[in-house]
Amino acid sequence: MMPPTVTPAQIRAVQASFARVFPRKAALSEHFYDLLFGQFPELRPLFPDDMRAQRGKLADMLALIVRGLNAPDHGASAASDLARRHRDYGVLPAHYAMLGTALIGALKATVPGGLTDEELGAWQAAYGLLASVMIAAAHPEEADSAA
Image (cartoon, rainbow, N blue to C red):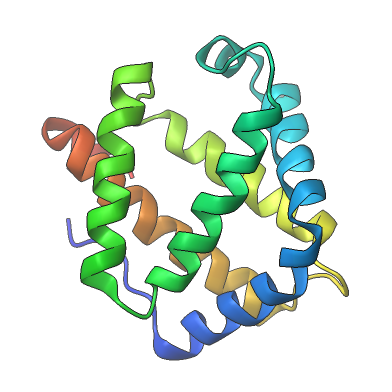
């Protein structure tokens, strides 16, 4: 299966909406984990008890990934490294859909002015690409069936 693609217009839409939410990155991260653990409590044991540092790491990683959309090779390399670390923490291919659901929900709730339909589609495409790259890096044996 070919990984999803992200068009230049979608990259611009993701970056524009992320620029609007970046000043509220703490709220985005907090909302993300509230949604993730509320909807998928089975994922809570994969994370530390004290989530303060983890929330900051999420915001920083999102910023790196959003910037990396302009340099796909660099972004894919960073995402692959991240995926291999997360595999060691117990993240499975099936978890990526759960994370995507929480991310999109958190973005919808915290991006000032909300997400336009174009931005929503762009985030879904970008996350689909990210998840496929990460699954392929961390679980190559399952990459075709999990994304």
